[in-house]
Amino acid sequence: MRKIIIVTIFVLLANTLMIGCTSQKSLQEPPNVKAKEKSDLKKTNKEDAKDLGGSFKEIIDLKKPNIEDARDFEASLRNGSVIMISRENSEELEVYNISMLDKFLDSFNNGKQGYVCVIKGTLKTDGKILVNKLEEFETDGKVIKDTAYDTYSDKNKFIQGKPTYPAKMVKTYPGDGIRYAILESKDTPDNMGGTVISFNKNSIKNKK
Image (tube, rainbow, N blue to C red; front, top):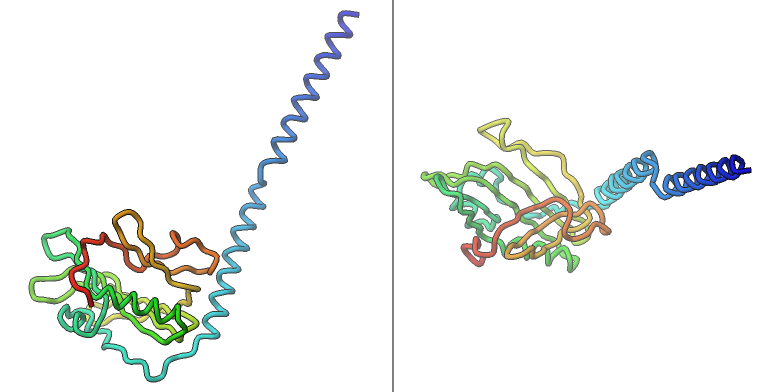
């Protein structure tokens, strides 16, 4: 009789453990499901970007500076390009014309046409910028067109890349900083997305 009781208890414990493991497994998301959701999200973002690109209306009379002027600090300062530089032998960042990015953001949010060029690099003693990042943003008032340039392949000219069409641009204030970002989807949180430019507030050197 005692042996039967012990066997019964053992069987009950084994069943309990199996049920517990099964329940825990059912609560865990299968890896293939998670991967599929990520893949579906990526596919949706690509489809959204394709739709946005197809609906973008090119601005025929758009006034743009010569892209090669991005190497010239004074010329870029005058034409309203947003510039973020560090000087040779210094790690301190300096930001110029940031209000032009605010103006672009306002144009997009209010359904108006707009353009802005963003330059990042090192300012040399001869007044030339060693450009390491160069991007142009256009909006027809509904869609943003983002064109990045290859600044490394050819030292004599910037090579234009294929445009992308992010869903929106946002401005956030992380800590003492300011960050502008482009988001693939309108559902993407503002604190995510690709950084356009990010800096501390005390890096701003002029108000234009």
